[in-house]
Length: 254
Image 1 (cartoon, rainbow, N blue to C red):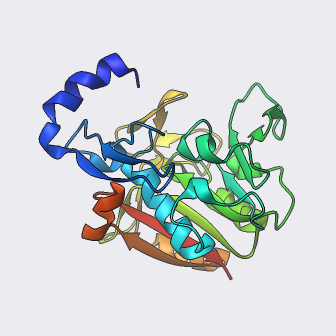
Image 2 (cartoon, helix red, strand yellow):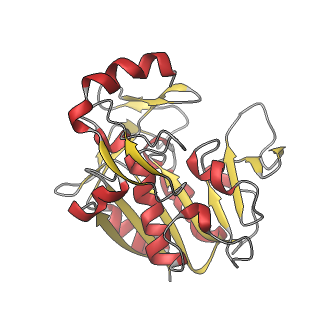
C-alpha cells in the first residue's frame, strides 16, 4: 500500500491508533489504524508493516512453539526450528529471511513448482507441495485456504510436510455458529458458482475468488486429517501488541 494513499486515513483515525510493542520486529511503536471497521487487517506497525492479524499469528508461534522469546525477530539463528510461510515479502520475511530456519513461497503458474525464485523463496502450489515429508515444525497460512480450490488436499499436504508434533498456524474467514458455506462447486473440472462470486483483495494477484467461507465443521475436517486444533481469540491484553478483533487457528499434527 502506497504511503500517499495511507496518510489521509491515518490522520482521520488518530483516536484509534494504539501504542505498544510489535512482537515481530520488537519496536516500541504506534500501531496505525487506517480502517476502524477492519482493524484485524490493519493496525499497521510502521517499522515492519505487520497487521494485527499477522502479529496474532506471531503471538501463537511465540506462546505455543518457541516459548523462549517474546519477539519473532529475536528467535536465535541456532534455534532447532524449521518454518514455512506461504507468503512472501511480509513482516516475517523481513525479520527471518536471512536465517536458515525460514522458508517461504508464492505461486506463479508460469514457474515450475519447487523452483527457487531467490534464496529461501520457492514457487509452491499448496495442493502439491514439493517439500519432503516431515520437513517443518511450523507452517503458516493467512487467509489462504478459502481460495484453495481443493482445500482438503492442501491441508493434507501441510500435514504431510509437518513433523510429528508440528503446527499449522493459520487464519481463514470462519462462522463458528454454522456449517461451511460452499460458494463454488469444484467437484468437476469446471467451477460452478452456487452463490454470487466473492473476491478478496490480494497484494500480488489483485482479486482472487473465494471458494468457501468455513464453518464449525472445519474442526471435524482437521481432526480426520490428523490435527488437534484450537482457536485463540484476541483479548484485551493483546492490545499491547496491537492485536485487535482477531482469531487464529493452531492445529497440531498428532
